[in-house]
Image 1 (tube, rainbow, N blue to C red):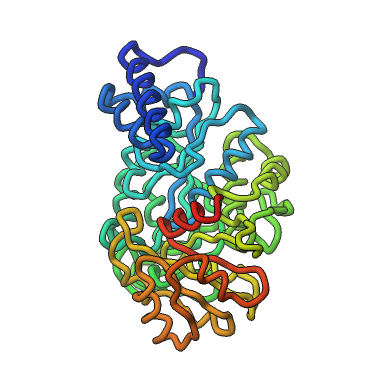
Image 2 (image 1 turned 30 degrees about the horizontal axis):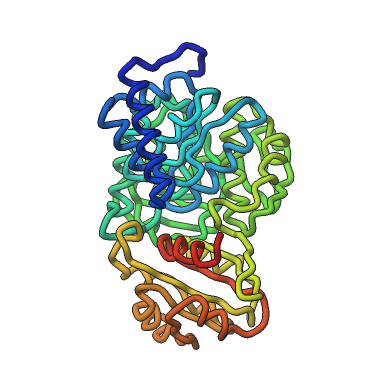
Length: 412
């Protein structure tokens, strides 16, 4: 919990100083922000540093397959109504990056921390969070991440008996299974567009029944809990039944869902929904996502989509045909090297759009688009793709490292 006493030992202070020095050297060498290498060095010098840094903070952890970076940003913006916030806003979401973020701000009252799914239980042990927001679980990085049922089980075991208030999406059966071991859960109804990872019961393996927005297992009785918060169109319904309007600069239904979860989380800290939602309007882009940039005299909107659920949500918010679409896919370490997930994406949703394909794995994507009956052209560079695009704003959709490549090329 937040307090004014200095929790850092001399060893911890040395670790923080060394980590900052290494991070600064990494930035000076042009090797990125330096947050990860700085955090690794700091944790090497003091393995308990993350726990020490978190002692004086009210901590919120945010984890999910999709939407955690944006939701972290929205919660941080909302909580600034109640005091200074430190956050890993650039998405360095493993222990080293989290440690760097907390070490960089000694005046904060709150820490709003995005956490990679694999590390959630460990980070929760170290940081003693007051609140944990769980948004969704779906297939992602098949060669790196556990199968979704195994991930839900790991969360369920790791968070069992936690003192934290868990804010959880009641429309995702995997999230409900993961959160149900926690004694204090606030259920939020935000919907679930991608259902292909949630047709079997995580409790018994039976077939899930999904009438309308409801779901239940006919074999063991595991079922959707009753929410106390809900997304309803362009409003958030609070536990008292009041409807609060959502006004975001971020596009799409998925971000309204993120705002609803963020409002429920902010309320745990006493920030009223109206105040929280008004503050969220300030967020225009998140680490380059949703930015509209000028490149070669054209408007490009940069969109990140890393897995089938993310691509499905992204397709729902792009401009209608015949707006041109550039797709870029890599398969580097940070993406996962297995591209078989491309076959789980419904590319028929792009029918009518002129499509241009690039990235390290452009030929993998080209095969998938051909099978989906789409018309496309393979390009070697972004410049070539933009030159070939017909008039109109260009929607650029890329997975993680491809997105970073594009941002560097357009100077974003």
